[in-house]
Image (tube, rainbow, N blue to C red):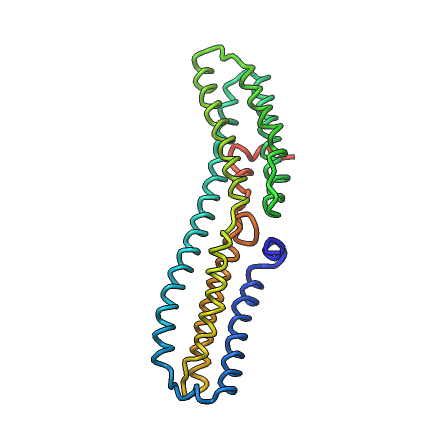
Length: 263
């Protein structure tokens, strides 16, 4: 369900629903509780409620900050992995220019098939949370076979050959890391702490009584809005290949890899 929402609904719409819905529910709950228990407006329990809100809010804030920073770091790491994989593929393409025409053509064909498989087959699968090695495995093996069958004829070719092998090995490693990141998600315990904590903290604000209804609703709405926006960040950052804030496959279309996309 979360992947479907990220891939079919814009982040702006999710923000309106999440933040706006949290604020509306919090305001409605506060009004209903105040009407049910008019004595809350006198603030008879504000000392106890204030201490509880402060302690719980501090603990929950630390947990939420930790979750958001972790997810943002994961997204940044995923972008680095994708960029590194595309860069290594581009370097292999450049190194291949030093080889004989037949070897160059075979290696180019394997690399072209690989980047097309990454963008056109693997990327949609990663967005859907179902990454697979199959789409790129054949092309990567073809590239390795080309290099394994080639014997450099000069010191110059030997240098480029060694570099090409290193970069091709790096591609294989980066591919595995990318597919592993596509399966990462926030552990259930942290999900429970993030979303369950909001379900406890927001209702606690209802108990902090203020004589003027507008002031109390402003207080409740502000806390609910901040928590709703934080939960939205947790939701959209949890899947690095899904949604509007996802990692882009653009690096596989640029630089030395751009010719593979020309008609």
